[in-house]
Picture 1: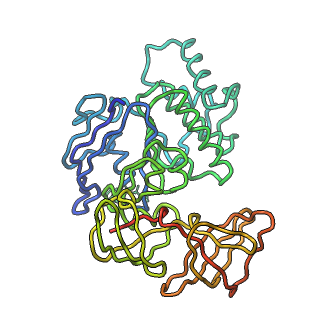
Picture 2: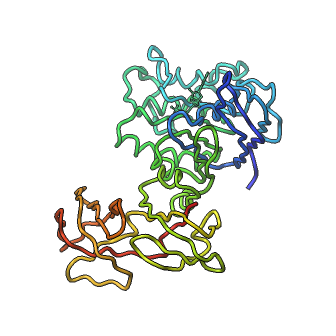
Picture 3: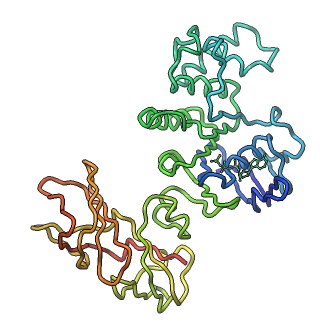
Length: 361
Ligand code: ATP
């Protein structure tokens, strides 16, 4: 893997407001990289700093081995696709895409037409060139914006919430298309999103940001299975949290978890290492289970009472109270054939497995 973008000690202040705090980050060539975090955490500021629309207050941004200090946005090997489609409604699709070439005066008309056609084919808009841009659907407009950004074959495509204006179905379709497109063109994509599912689906790696800082940077599976803090665990998907006391940290970790009792877990289940004393363990809802009548399990069981039932068609989410724990456990169950949907108040047994726990500071 070759590093394409390196940020070292980047800080950004807006007057007194510290919007980026000591960001150190490397993004590789050909990588699909996402900046994920709640509103106001600084992800757009970070993207704009890479693009050259914002200058860091201190620190270094390198792209392709060159220091970007003083290099304006239009001279950087990056191109940005914005949240709002930002296409010109009074122009045709082809004219909109050709707008991406406006600074390349030396390209002749014929070559331009060919480049536009290629860019449109890339985003699945073959033959749409003559259409009026205002007559397109939201998804099609976003494709035009993409084609316009891709036509100059930038090294890096910066995407600021590009799908947020689309409805759920269209968004999911565009997610798949963006992944395909990124693989096809092989350039680095940097996506800003506050949608954790979108980041998990699309990215090679994700930086999760809170209050101007990177909380964790990892591939989607590591972020989901081994979050390094409570805030990452709770921002990405649902996570049950149980109080625990860590007794021994050695080759394995001995601990007692409230409601579940004493157990041993592996060191790798503690992304931050683990320390003797009080801690919290996280358990994902789908790694817990309910033992239905007629089913058996080799895993461990604890008695519980159903507190809440939410039926989703393919899944049912249960809240189940277990003894000694204030918050009910959230449990996600597939609605398999023959499985009833339990009612509130039903006595049941919760299946759990210490291998699915993550120990959090
Ligand atoms: P969102 O998802 O809501 O767009 P974000 O994570 O992209 O949020 P930023 O837009 O990077 O967040 O903003 C980070 C913080 O910096 C916010 O508190 C914002 O109010 C502040 N901020 C952003 N731009 C400016 C500016 N030009 N002047 C002053 N403050 C700013």
